[in-house]
Image (tube, rainbow, N blue to C red; front, top):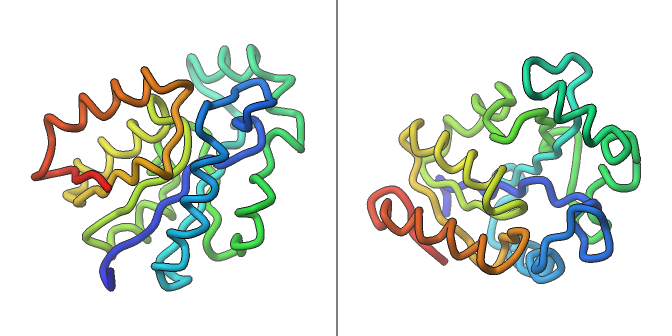
Length: 174
């Protein structure tokens, strides 16, 4: 894994089972990610956090208006406590769009890696968007099924069905 990175996308409190945007397997994903972190050097682990843009464009303005109450709730937007302890100023990247690569600093950092291990939420949204952008960069993707949560199992399986068409050349499953 010396030329691999671990991407942890949007593991924020809002996706916990008791909150507004609950994903069925968020708690399972947290445990998986905690174990996976041990397999990577600290400088190969990157956390992504979604924060609403202060200057949204187009439909993002509608999105931010619709979810203003959630976006302004500090607790809901914060990282889950189990993973927060691993976050530093150097490994946290903020995004305001679905793809983690909308953060240009992260894009530059990930250009140094050949293989990207993907974990986080939401499978059918930010995870999928990020994967397609990484593939377009020429990266090999490891889809860490145990570390990814979708809104429900059906949606998670739909994402896997799409990605299986890109396997094993672009995406492999773990």
